[in-house]
Each structure stands twice: as structure tokens, then as C-alpha cells.
Amino acid sequence: MALLVAAGSGTRVGGRVPKQFALLAGRPMIAHAYDALVAHPAIDEVLVVIGAGQEDMARDALGTVRTVTGGATRRESVARGLAAAGEAERVLVHDAARPFLPAEVIDRVLAALDEADAAIPVRAVADTLVDDGGGVVPRAGLHRVQTPQGFRRRALVEAHAAWPADEEATDDAQMVRRLGGTVVLVQGDTMLDKVTYPEDIAAAEARVAWETR
Ligand code: CTP
Ligand code: MG
Image: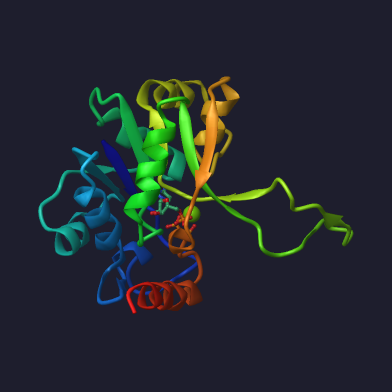
């Protein structure tokens, strides 16, 4: 089963509606990732985590789909989704803010779960990295983490239960790892880069236009 987390307010993108409901390549952003998850043969169910009061926007964007109300942080939204996720052995967690989701990435994440508690898609860091003092931080061995992240559901449930309420986590795999779970890296995809700032919308549209040229 898959959780599509879409309960954020999209403050950095701004705009009239939260970014996941804004039009991207002609459709509400959330619809792209939703369709990709539903279309994948190994995913039997998609549960959409939305913000309180976003029910009408979700229905306009997706039609009648199963939703659950998220929380104030991404971590809380995932936890609420998990609580409604049933007994599936494996769960994928995907950001609605990563609209273009190649089926091959889902394949890689699910395949890696045969050997691990969590599997995360990553990309190499392209820019030179420096610390506050301007000293170069070697980027070999560093990766940017994307979603969908895959989990043995029990490992993720335990990780959320054990996580301190006053600490934030921007990603679920780090929570599983803290409890001693195994996390493996698989190859991500540029298409999955997150829409975080207003200019990322145009960049995402350009990427999909390039891909389907
Ligand atoms: N998310 C969520 N619940 C929250 C916060 C975030 O479900 N309380 C989701 C977002 O909808 C998004 C994903 O987590 O799909 C990644 O978060 P981010 O890119 O930070 O989105 P927002 O939190 O909406 O944006 P911002 O931080 O700019 O407000
Ligand atoms: Mg956020």
C-alpha cells in the first residue's frame, strides 16, 4: 500500500492554494503522483493524507478517493496515515510535492525491501559543498534523498512510536535507522526532485516536457 502525503501548506511556494493543488502541466500537482501510484501493478491501495479543510480541494483534484487527515508536521502526517494503513506488509511513503514518479523507481524501492527494513531513492550531489567557514566538504559518498521511500510497515510503525515527540524528522528512513533498522539506497530520478520554491514548478514542467518530447 502507499501513503501519499499532501497535508502541507506549501508556504515556500505560496499562491492561492497549497502547492499540491496548484496546476502543474495542466493538472493539480497531486493528481500526477496519485495516478502513478495507482497505475503501478504492485500497489494495491493508495491512501491520501490531506490537511484539515482540504477535503473539497482533494475531491476536485482526484475525485472520490480514500483520504485521512494529516497533522502539523510531515512526521505527524505520515503517522496518521500509518494508523489508517491496515495490515499491509510493505508501505511506500511518497510526497505529493514530487509529482512525476517513474514506475522504475517504485520497482527499485520495492525490490530492495526484500533485503532491508527501508529503501530510499537517492541522487548524487552535483554542486560543490562548503561549510559555514567556506571549507569544502567532500561530496563523494553524499546523496540527496527523494521519495517514494519503502518500508516494512512494522519497522516504520515502531520507528514512529519510538520517536521523541519534540524532535522533528524530515524523512522516515532516518527514524527506522535510529532504531537499528536496515536502510538501503537505490537509484532515484531527476524527475522526482521536490517542488519546494515557486520556480520549481516551471522546472518540473520543463523536465516532464523534456521527458515526453
Ligand atoms: N506534508 C504533510 N504534512 C505536513 C507537512 C508536509 O503531509 N504537515 C507533505 C507536503 O504536502 C509535501 C511533503 O510533505 O507533499 C513534503 O513537504 P514540503 O515540501 O515541506 O511541503 P510543505 O510543508 O507543504 O511546504 P512548506 O514547507 O514550504 O510549507
Ligand atoms: Mg514543509
